[in-house]
Amino acid sequence: MRLLGLSQLIQLPATAMLAGDRVLGLRSELARLSPINGAIVRVLGGASVIVLVASGALVATYPHDAIWTSLGRALLSFLGAFWTARFGLQLYYGRFWPLRVRRWHYFLCIVFFLQGPGYLLVRFASPS
Image 1 (cartoon, rainbow, N blue to C red):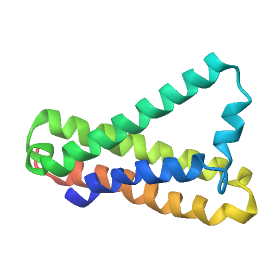
Image 2 (image 1 turned 120 degrees about the horizontal axis):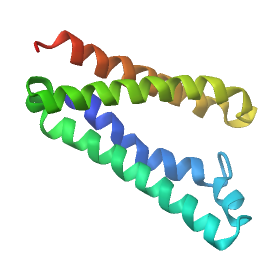
Image 3 (image 1 turned 90 degrees about the vertical axis):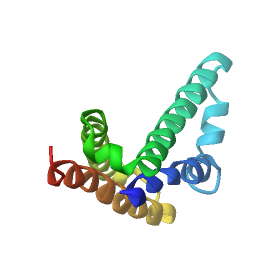
């Protein structure tokens, strides 16, 4: 359980790496947006990373509560559904990744595949 929660901390370096010009060039793409649109994308992206890291930190810090309380089981259900959907989106958009960095796409597929079903397995295998 702790490992699943800790796995969400990957969001910080992965987002920074993907945003850099060496992988997907997101930073240079954002620079082409108007200042307000660029700010909106940065704020929403940053908020998403913070929420994902924080929810993973909660699961890693309180694994017993995640398994044994109704709120914890709801969080596990949400995270399981979220990461399973994220895996599906990663598969779909994988064809658009440049070949030179496709290995990062496969890495993310593995991570999301382990996270989604992992959370769901813990959620539904644990006593209610």
